[in-house]
Image 1: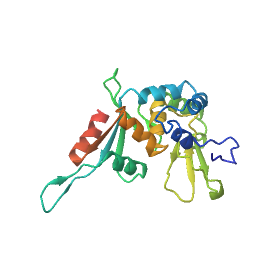
Image 2: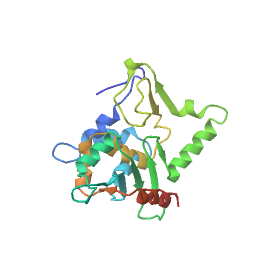
Image 3: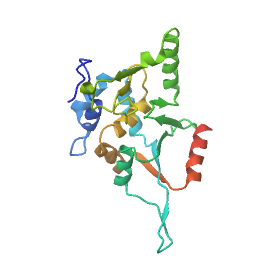
Image 4: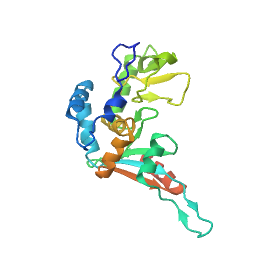
Length: 222
């Protein structure tokens, strides 16, 4: 397991998330127990419950193309190809939670570590009040500019494509079950996401038309 020697107690959460489901398709109780104690406010249990709720959606934009010989629209990709494109960050995708007890969908952005839920908003406001005379970025961000100390962990990582610096959010200060749940799915390994897709607990939806893609964003804002 990779650790960050500069921090002393660095943990590769991506690796742990990837070990959460064993090769038999069952929960790894040892890893689950460890992760339970690593997150406050029972975040890990709440994240797992969210994954099992069937309320988590992944929308992927797959522009349709036309076969010149048959004039038929080609637009369907296999789940495996879609999952790989999401992990490679090769295409546009949106993460949306549709709670059963609320009418307002929750928008999650892992790349920028943002969530539209009330819990995230309250934590952010708390951070703003705490550092009103200081620098919020200094409080929430951890930059690693020494390539010798780069980490393999993708959990709470920002600007993942930079070759000269790694930037992480201090997730112990700013986290919610929605961010953690999608991190388990999308910051671990494709095997984990495919496992929950096959169980029908996560819904992966292709959108082939740009108008439909824009309507999705409008509905989330509304």
